[in-house]
Amino acid sequence: MTADLFQTVATTTAAVCAGATGGVYVAFSSMVMPALNSRPGSEAIGAMQRINVQAVRPPFMVLFFGGAAASVVAGLTAGTTDTYGLVRLAGAVLSLASFGVTAAVNVPLNNRLARVAGAGDLAWQAFEQPWTRANTVRGVLALAGAAALAGSLTR
Image 1: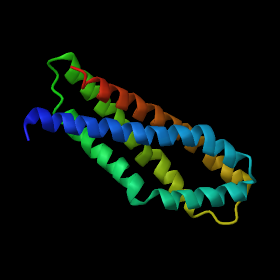
Image 2: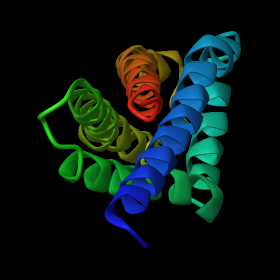
Image 3: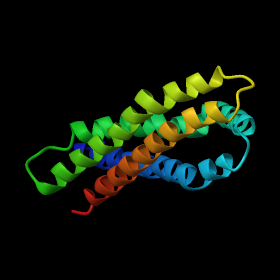
Image 4: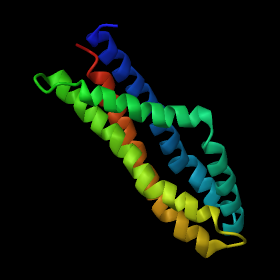
């Protein structure tokens, strides 16, 4: 595989994965979390705990970790001597920033929620607001990264 083809495959993979994960995050913030908020706290917690268990399975994990790995490769091979390389680098950084928000904020909140049993509205409110805020940020970062990565392929 030539270096250009390798870079194109890595960048395309990173863009697709960032777009898919970003779409999941934005859908969660705009549809799933408001639906959970309409339920009593104990029901919302139980549902979110089940969702978090289901999320850590191969279909999403391949997108999540594969996209991060592809973003690293796309960023490392981007080059900074032309606009397309700079856009590719920016896209990789945005995509990896989304990964970082997940690791730094959403996963610790999910882990904390996993240990909550029989809690009600206050526990849900303490979880939901910071989680949704971070989730929206990671969604926007991922989608912006996907757009930049895809745009860098247009030359």
